[in-house]
Image (cartoon, rainbow, N blue to C red; front, side, top):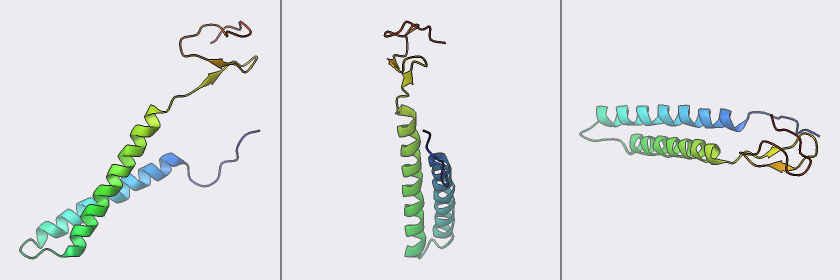
Length: 95
């Protein structure tokens, strides 16, 4: 039984976090530099939030890449190691 997909997947959320974080960072830095003699605290907070969002999104990307993908035999369902050419349980050739 397969899971029914609902809403947005995790990569859509990661891209959204990247875009919003980058936009907030750029806007916050621009506004802070523009009003440099007396920078507004709001712009500094926006810059910090943008930076945090970027780090969260980058962390999620790195974590997703490190996940180990498990493979299973199509005949018997036994877990297959990465370098196996044949299934250890039933002997079916892995393609």
